[in-house]
Image 1 (cartoon, rainbow, N blue to C red):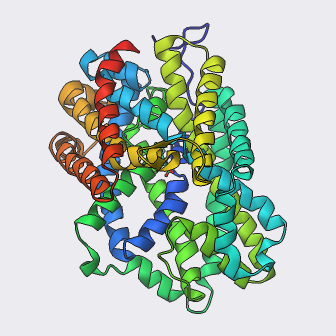
Image 2: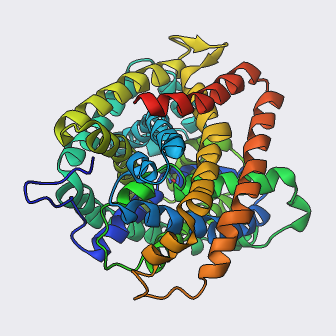
Image 3: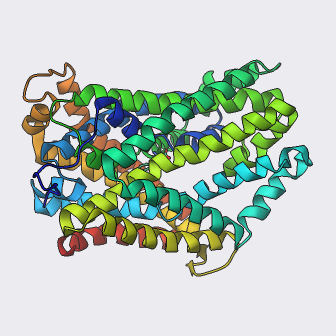
Length: 476
Ligand code: PHE
């Protein structure tokens, strides 16, 4: 049932700008800065960036617009919105709720790592031995206790804002935090670009080496586009359910995709020229922003400390506007489908996520339960990254195009014909035929790569979870 207030109205965004900031805040996260930068480094630079941009524009925009339309059509969050059309498909929405929940079981741990770099920078760690920065990072994440304190701080912020609801919480926080993030990244990028030797980094980032393009880079770029834009998991459907009926959905989706991509590129410009200027390797993996970037800041002298502080503020800022949306998918589901109040739904969701994050964090120290020998952090990451995210994207595309259908989608996107969308035919063609097939290939390849990396039993468990959403969605 639709959650409404005493006047029978659903919560909604206060303004178009506020909504765009909130949706951009959801999309822009650690995926744009932490994951994007090390994925660029691991996949050979410019070729990956080029593929990423193409996929973001074609696949990302197409699916995001579909999600906004699904959510706003009946002003219901992801499960309810789908159920109205066909109960048999409600598993597609339910899968999104599960994926958001699972991402919330490890993403805040990385958010906590990021927060920890604020006091560390203030404590003057940059003036210690740069050779040891990698060690500081690995010692910290493998310490059983300290990271938990920062996970706790991360959740405290998330709950406080989440409890305030859509307009007074999520929208307000995003409207303040998003501009802060942009400004910080621009400042760091300008500094990086003015360093001698910085052009090598720009060449690395923007000059595609076509010999680097293969099946693996294409899949990595597409997976990065799904994750970084945060599509298919119901966040955009849920946020869409709070948009008023007058807004232009197509231009909103274009803004969000454009801004999300801009932040990823900006993060690349903030990082790579500086890394190259100081002769550092771009392929340091997940430790790139935590272990390699401090070396860059340390080399810059006193201004480096200020820039490092800004940079390590920007990471949790990006993370929190994202986790607010992930939490909101589960909360809105409980509110719409289980008729729970926001307060109760928020606490239940956050406590469950926090407990699982504790296990994920402890697994970094080699403590706690494992699944088939794999630590909990990696299990959640593998489930979502290799199977469930692309699986959810595929089912949402199929539902929208084949069940909801062109007539309703067009009516919703054009506001009943008042705001024509010139590319509707091309858009619908992509959604109906191209996306399901392409995403199917990504999903199968993700599963195969999981097996190839030796995670067979974890992959099988992930597939079982995906299939289990079909009967479970009927029960819950
Ligand atoms: N897009 C977010 C990021 O880049 C992650 C995310 C995934 C958000 C799934 C919503 C849904 O960090």
